[in-house]
Structure formats: structure tokens, C-alpha cells
Image (cartoon, rainbow, N blue to C red):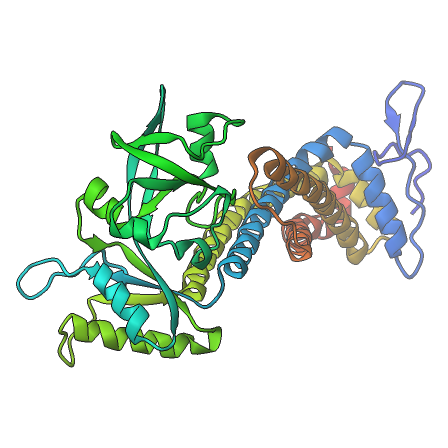
Length: 438
């Protein structure tokens, strides 16, 4: 079939005398049909003919892909920070806390609260061969003052062993001693955040006197800056001797937690069994009674934090993927509009020998091209967003190749899935009806 004077619209045409676009008539298809290179060329020409519409169509894919990359980068960075935290504190660290795990406290038979005490900590240090050191802790919040400046912070009462057991050294001054703890001396070590808010950036706080709950305390040392460490900012705290915190600040006899360092990592399980047996005896628990305390290792704690972080990351990534689905629906809508606009072009292509497979391939390539271009731009936007969060907000971010591959692959899948129906609709058009379409 020869079309000598056809004015059928298709990309790549020329202007006629009247000013209307008159596009070239497709040449007769070869017996083997349209090649893949030809299909890509025709699809690219169709997209270039509507640049603004193509860009707006890709916007949903760009936003969705960028959001997925940024969210996964945040989750991966948080996981990396957890691993670094484990390496800093050591995998041979145990935490003994009162109550059944997941509950705040346990009531004894008589209705009185069951708690851990400093004597429990001393017994662990003396009677458990697999234990290297202990540091009982009691904590609460309090307002601290120096002159006209005040700051609300965390107050921690503990032993001097906390310095190396929790890898919290001082950069100026020194820690308190066991003698200070015995006499309940009013001395403290402060974090850099507290020092900055009370003394400013250039003043050395060592030797000055601050007020904690209106009680004078001498500053003995300044902690090394460490920043946020998984569950809180360790720079924003004041450390005092355990008994000073219990008797002078908080009015309690029990401890909130007992930190335990095993002799080595191989002794962790044995140390846990020794501690469990000892505290059960001290708390007079009978065989079959449930523990009124629980023991967790640093690895367990960090694993829980990592799993929580991963869960939230997957949740946020799933929400971000919805944007990709919305972008895919946008692609489908535009492709359906494109099929309607180019109905007569499709009829001409079929009339000159175009097969269903050629039409299907052409429109499917257009859909995939829109999705992949949006995916590539979205990946760039996601990397830029993750870098901006790391630079301006100070968050830990890490863009992994797996995240990029996932986003790119999902973009391709969206293009195929949401482009197939419009492409199939175009391929199934009846050439006679298509040529009659106005």
C-alpha cells in the first residue's frame, strides 16, 4: 500500500505550506520487521517530540527513586554506626538489669520491688571468675548551673572503672576514685556538650564548681567528645561517684544497671551463667522461679538496635516505593494518551507491513526509556540528598551499590509493568479502524 500524499502525524516530520506539521510516511517494513535499533530510534524521536510532557511523566519516578536511595542510605549508615559502636565498646561487655526482659520491674512475693544493688555488683566482681570488672550505674536527669548559665542533662552515678569499661576517657583533668565514692565526695566529670553550654567553647571547666540540683560539685575532668552513640548522646552527661548520686542527688539505694566486662569474648557465656547463678542465690529464688533480672550482651543490644533500624528503614523504603508506583501509573496514563494521539500513525505502520510485535516493542521501549531516565535522575537526586543530610544534619549515611541496583531494577520493572498494557493496546489496534480515526 502506497501513501503518496499522506499527512499522518509522526515524529521527525517537516512543516507543510499551510504551516501544519506533515510527517514523513513510514517506509514499507522489511520482511523481518523492525529491528531493535530502529525501534529505539523511533521511540527516542517520539519522546523528544514532547520533551516537557516526558519530563513531567518522569517526575514521579525521580522522586520515588531519590527517596528510596536516601532512606536506604540513612539505614545503612545507622547500621555502620552500630558496628563501629560495638568495636569501640567491645563485644565482651554484659549488662545486668532488674526485671524480666521487656518489663520495667518485677514485684516480689510480698509486693515489694525487686532491684539490683551495689552489693550485687560487688559480689559479681568478687565471686565470678570469668568477670574482669564491673561498673554499677544509677542515672536520672537534673539541671546543672554555673553562674548565670544552666543546662538540663543526664546525671550518671558509677564507679571509676566506667572510664575504660565504656571507653569514655577524659581529655582534661582526671576521673574520681573509689575513695571519692566511699566518702560520697561531691565531684564530677562532665561531657563536652555540658561544658560548652555552661562554660562556653574556650573555657577549661576543670577546677570550677557547678551546681547539680543546687548542690555544689567540683569538676575534676572533661570527657572526650564521642557524639551520638546509638541510644543517646554520651557527650551530654555528668558523671559522679555512685554513692554520691544515690545519697546526695537521687535518694535511692538500688542501681539502674550493672555493666560487666568478661575476661575475654570466649568467656562470655560462662560469665553469664556465673552471674545468673550468683544473683539467683542472692535474691533467694527457688528452682522454677523466673529470674527477677535479665542479662544481655553488647552484641545482643547492638543486634536489637540494628534490627530496629533495619525495620524502620524497610518501612520508610516501602513508603518511598509507593512514589515509584504512582510514577508508574503516570507513565501508563501518558502512554495511553500517546496511543490515542498516534492511532492513525499506528494504522499506517501496520498498513506498510508493521507487525504487532513491532508496535508492541516500540511503545514498550518508550515506557521503559521514561522509567529508566527517571530512575537515573532519581539515583543522582538520592545520592545528593544523602550527602546533604550527612553534611548539614550530621547524620550517618552510606549509599551502597545494592541500593542503587535495587532502585534501578525497580525503575525498569515499573516501565515494563505499566507500559505493557498501553503497548499491547496499540499493537492490537485494527489498521482499518486506526486509519479512519480522526
